[in-house]
Length: 452
Image (cartoon, rainbow, N blue to C red):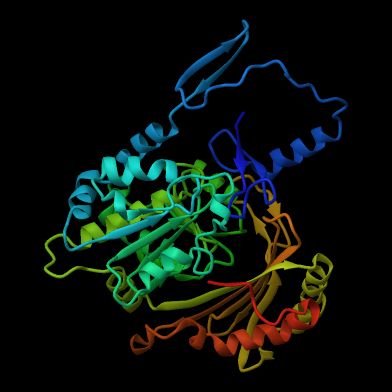
């Protein structure tokens, strides 16, 4: 058994845009491949579709059960109340309430006219005492107000403008996506990459979040996500897992009691309180870290302060992702085939790519430590001797064309270089990636659609 979720995810939605159905399995996690494969096989046997044209409409605004005949009923629940009850078990709401009422701190949350707008006032205002003026675009709309509900620096334009305004009043900003599972975290004139976010949450979880008071069972990240979390796991002495992209892989680890905090570079972060990435949870995790670090502080401890302190302790994994959206599918597949058949075989240990020395190159394959299932062709990765990485993946979450994702990472432990501009720090390796992939030649694209 499970649940169907309808929506456009983090893509533009509405009658003329994306609309889809997700099936989440019995623990709340995205359905594993063994289930989706079975569903696909069942679709091949469908011979007729039965409908209920005479079934009256249900008032979805009224909580309660509606009975139809003797054997069928529909129950409307308040998911906001259930979710809030769970969050109160995870976080210290008294600490958060005190921090949000502090005159020295101001925050803003942008729901991008998507589903978390229905939760925002109940959680941030009514439960935690925040100002209603701190909520932006919190009226859910079927087409997301004509916007693109993907919480990144390109599409969350209004929030980014507020947080990077030279005279801006906000110390902390956050956004969530179309179905509420992704998040973006910003400080004043400061962006926290999702890769850094999950690492910083993990590093501070035991101290700042009561749910983790006994420590973490383990941590996990998707393969394209930077290695920042690996460093935290090593210092904490907890198990670490590298999985393919897709939350279902984390779900297996959580169900087996092996993972407490996990994340993906695609703005998904979560804990084992549920089996899905959770945008509001990530926002409250960051607010909890800020609240704890500001206890007894004279001056405001900021998002930037927390990030710099973390980098000084662990080093910084400079990271960025280039998204080339809506590419011709054939051209994108030809580029990936070029990487598999030409680049990987020649990228032997010790060989050179630009100024970088290759350590290994492969097409990532994952054997699930819980059920033994194997996921192959999960992304082309080239790892260099200094730990830098180039990764290429195709993504198919939209309904038009293919999206090529290029991930770039370079580690730096020189404390004098913790605050370089990421694009400048990564410029040589980005140029190498574009050259070896021949992305421009295959796709005709001069520049990415989105840079994060």
